[in-house]
Image 1 (tube, helix red, strand yellow):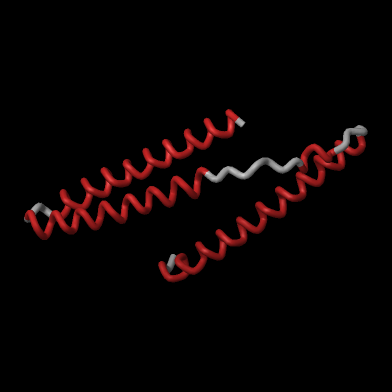
Image 2 (cartoon, rainbow, N blue to C red; image 1 turned 180 degrees about the horizontal axis):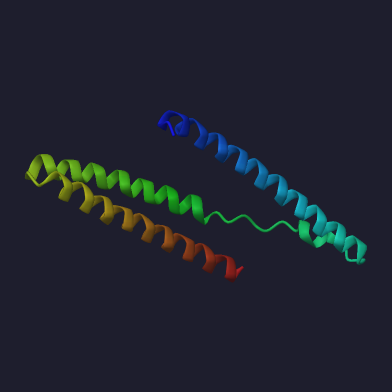
Amino acid sequence: MNIEFLAIMIPIIAIIGVFTMIIYLRKYDNIERMAMIEKGVSPEFLNIKKPRNTSFPLRASLLLIGAGLGLFIGHILERNFNLEEEVAYFSMLFIFGGIGLGLAYIIEENKNIKERNL
């Protein structure tokens, strides 16, 4: 099989697969609702909106800020202290990324404590 043909077919098959999955999920959701209506159960409780979870954007943003700071500090360490490139970048990337995730955890816990006290 030609590699160019395969490179073209993979995205096409992936898009068709995602489209088919969405259609079947909506179909089975509709079948479930119709079965509930036939049994006399109101399907309105399925439409209850959950409160938005804002922890993912906070975690992602602080992780990326920490990664950016880590790359910057790694660059400074490489230039000024003649460290090996891999050591400087990866160590600072992981240290500052971990600090960002720890900070996100602390902020989320403080937010949860304030919500419980209300």
